[in-house]
Every structure is written in structure tokens, then in C-alpha cells.
Amino acid sequence: MIRFFISFASRFIPRHHLQRFSAFILKIVGVFYLGKNFEDPITGIKYRKLLPYGRIKSRPNALAPHSMSLERHRLLWLYLKERTNFFTHEQKVLHIAPEYCFLKRFKKMKNLTYITADLISPWAEIKLDVQDMPFDDNQFDVIFCNHVLEHVTDDKQAMRELYRVMKPGGFGIFQVPIDCSIGQTLEDASISTPELRELHFGQRDHVRLYGSDYPNRLKDAGFIVTADKFVQNLPSNLAKRYALPADEIVYLCVKPLT
Image (cartoon, rainbow, N blue to C red; front, side, top):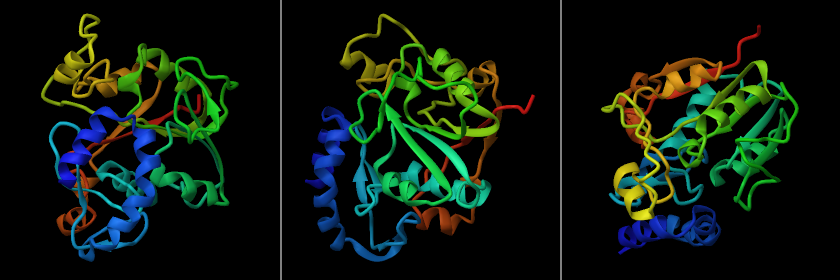
């Protein structure tokens, strides 16, 4: 029953509405999932199992109830702790489409000047179109823009904007759904109905399906891109304990100093 409800709701209810409704309920549900088999590294809470999640195909042990983090969110948290100075140095941060599990935690961090922005998210402080952002050049040390570009009409323009507002030497993480079995990103303006988009792009509001050429699109915008197989280099027992996405590659995008 829970698996069916989550699958239906995640397909047809906008994520920010779903999160607003679910936050309180999942904290109650989470009490019944406590145990020792899994751990959410964001909260440190341990569970006997996690909740399933998925729009079309449900994934077991995907959603941590108390933080509402998914596999990719837990991966990002660990990556930032292990591979970057995000938690230790003063940073001016722009977070596009801020994920619920990070909002309060990042806002409380004294080393961050943390700015949230999005076109529709109620969590965002600034309403903007990522294709035309109202910021001066070279403003941000860190930019997050995860699972956004697959929704954007002109993703290449959005990438140029992300590059423009990033400080030289700054970094960004711009994760997207990728099918690495296809070499070239699938885009077709005739795939325009929600049903066709779900069939070809994986979700009703996606406008493309990225292929293995994704890092090259980021490089074309000017970024130095590192494809980091971080999760594959973790001990397998930790990857399983944190319920991380086994094949996810983190694309670290750095703006050159010159």
C-alpha cells in the first residue's frame, strides 16, 4: 500500500506540494522503521529499512523518512564532506531548486551565506528562471542545481548562466538523470505530451534524456568537469548502509581561475 501511494503521488503531485504534505507524516511513520540496518548520514538516524520510492518503478530502501532524503541526496552529503571544503570554509552558496532535506541544515551553517532560488519552489527565497538569472557575474563560490536541467527548455543557456554567476575557482554540482547506454542526449520537440515525455524521457515534466555526452555539454559552457565515481570507491558495506545509488557519477564543475 505504501509503495503504491508513493509511486502514484510522486508521478502526479508536484514534488514541493508532496514534500509539504509528507514531512510531518513521514516523521511519524519513521518511528516504526527504526533499526540498525540502514543509516541516513544527513541525520545519523538508523533504520531497519527505508521507504520505497519511484515514479514508475519503485526502488526499495530509497527514502529516509525523517529527512526525506533519497539516494542521491545522501550521496551528495557524503561527497561534500569527503571531497570538498563545503562544511569548513566560508562560502557564498546558490542553491537552485533546494532539496527539502538540505534546507534547514545548510541555512544554519555559520560558514555559509546561503541563497535559495527557483521558478516554482515554495522553499526558494528568490524566484528566477535559471536561463536568465538576476545576479551579477562572478557571485557564488558554490552552486547546486540538481535534477533541474532536464526540465529546462534551453539547458545550454542555463549552463552558461550557471558559469557566469560562479566565481572563478568556484565549483558546482549539477546532477541530472542520465542513461549512459545512449551516447547522445535525446531531445525531440515533437515529444511534447506528459505521456510521451514519461515514455521517452522517464518523467512527465522532463524535456530530454541525457546520455553519456552530458559532461561535454557542461564543458562547452566553460566548466572544467571531473566525473567522480565516488560511490564506487566507497567500501561496499558503507554504500549499502547509507543506501546510495550504486552507479551514480558526481559531475564536479569548476570555473577556471583565468
